[in-house]
Image (cartoon, rainbow, N blue to C red; front, side, top):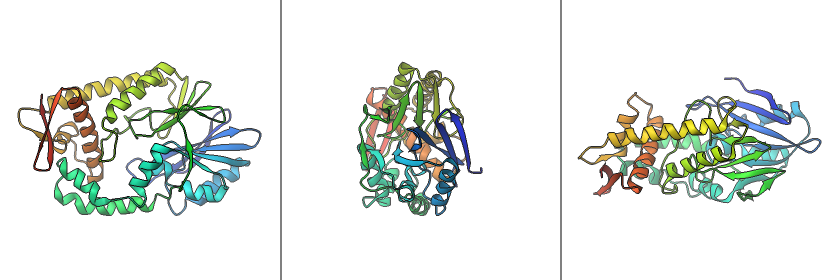
Length: 316
């Protein structure tokens, strides 16, 4: 996919950057601020050409970037925050919870060994270790986040945009809402379900968080949503209801995959995601399966079984 720049609404431009990942693009947004200012929401991946990509966008639009807002710490959203800040001189704003997770994942606290140990605890075969290390090192090299960003507080405003905390896809995920327009990040996508995974450093019930976030979108009834990937969402509340129904079906399928014998999240993921997957995507499948299993366990609809450093699940 080629890089693109388009005006999606009055005073809102969308910069689409190609990605060398499982998903081939990410959308970043530029929101008009005053006469000639911009607020940039998300930054793309911190590839070597990231600064040049952004320079091309800003040269076309003119004006100045007043602030940079990060919706969440995933690499295709926070990855180019530092080079964009250096290019524009604008401050980076990020939620405190999200920045703490960013440091654990991409900063000095990053521990591939801890991540692999967690995956092994939930059934990942040992021979995945080397590919996990190589892929993790490559991805980490593409994340150039900004240190000590200005903190964002959910419930406050940025230039008239309300900051919403919509956790699930990421613990500290923020979105922006003004006049019925939702800049959704990855909290809502038009044609696929955002990955909701449970990891070692996650909040304990990300799927429960996500279902509450979707219910809040239904309650707020935005008239349109601009997402981090894919097409514009003309009925955000309707799409949120579809995703609630989707996860209800997935929870039923997850429970049906359990029997009298304890099964790890990896084993259950092979039932829920039966198609052959690259190892990187299988790890996403494991994390999402674990989020569904833990949702069931926390509500006494499944039984968590821990034995010899391995966590498994069975019917309650």
